[in-house]
Amino acid sequence: MTFGERITYARKQKKLTQSDLGKLVGTSGDIIGKYERDEIKPSVDVAAKIADALAVTIDYLVKDAQYQNIDNDALNRLQQIEKLPKEERSHLFATMDAFFAKNKLLALLK
Image (cartoon, rainbow, N blue to C red; front, side, top):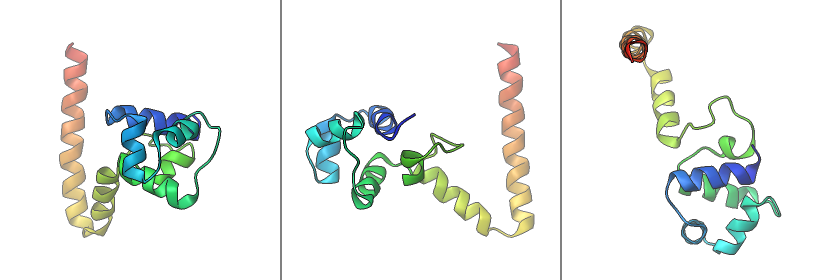
């Protein structure tokens, strides 16, 4: 996926028009359209504003990341998890594993 395709995808997920995104970023919808068509590239500062407006990481916008749909909320939670003591992380991971197993079983039953 290109930079422009990622902006388009994230914008549509947020149900924003190009004009809406332009207003959030401080530019026009026409410029957002040019970014989305990969006709021009924004400065790093503008790319950061776009990422913030779309609640995604700038990493998601500029490169093929393993976790393409990770948003700022998920990233912040991951950073908080890293700060937990090892034992508390283990408890959290065990709880997460239980939810993952449950969802996998439910998917098999469908």
